[in-house]
Length: 110
Image 1 (cartoon, one colour):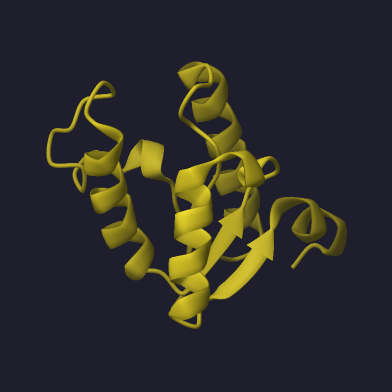
Image 2 (image 1 turned 45 degrees about the vertical axis):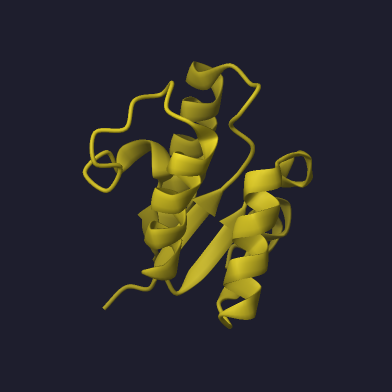
């Protein structure tokens, strides 16, 4: 069974279409490396009908639930500028998940 990896990166205060494209590319790469990618943009069933304009905290509650169903997390380049990504990294690390960083993953090919 494939390990699930949660994709984490900056979203708020960015162009949503650019971010959606970047998350999709990162998810595809993780899948090429043998993971089942969990992309917060593609998990609307988990979001229980939350729209893009819903409160950040509501999105984080749902995203953290998705994260906790995973085995690992992939921190996309630029994650440091996102308070949500920092929170996701803290939760993943505290729960003992393996942490991958996009740049290092692309150079070592998992």
